[in-house]
Length: 244
Ligand SMILES: Nc1ncnc2c1ncn2[C@@H]1O[C@H](COP(=O)(O)OP(=O)(O)O)[C@@H](O)[C@H]1O
Ligand SMILES: [Mg+2]
Image 1: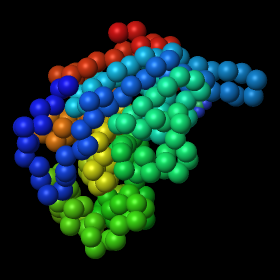
Image 2: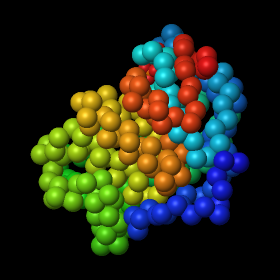
Image 3: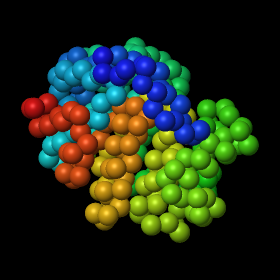
């Protein structure tokens, strides 16, 4: 087990320690085949994977190698075709739709290349939304959202709408949103794909900070080598399989 429970990292008011799980990800024969009419397309095939909690996993591989497919399965956004998958103690093959919704809301935080912010909501409202969907009251969630936004250097932006932000600010807003429900794991799919190198470096440093200081397991798919220095585990995919 990687984490030492006697070491208590500095935790800001905005975050709490995730539930410690010796193994964050356990996959056996993990397979996702897309069926388009009569044609079958391999997303990923027969992946065995064990990731202890507290890792920063960097997923590499050419376009079409299966990175997004793997992340979608880990995030509970998609269902596996075959195999077994346990994420932070949840058996994603067996759980019901209701359990899967709960899992998406509370156990994982997801960050996308295109930020996926809601354009008509303010920064603060975007960040609070997952907590509101989880049934919490706005006035209860707001202080935590503000603390997260302060940590991310966005205090002056809380009342702005996404279109008024730079790409880097949009992605940091998305990071705050991903953290509002204290997920044990953060999954990021090409999070720096739409950013200049300065902002890309900042976002990668934040993900590394989340991993090291706040002990979140982080899985990031990226073409950028900015992540390499922070990686504790590097996986390379090719044609839907892990090759190294
Ligand atoms: N929704 C989908 N329907 C059909 N095929 C898909 C779908 N998503 C991904 N694929 C296919 O699965 C393979 C892996 O894609 P993807 O996981 O997006 O790779 P990456 O993220 O590494 O670029 C590709 O051949 C892609 O065309
Ligand atoms: Mg992709």
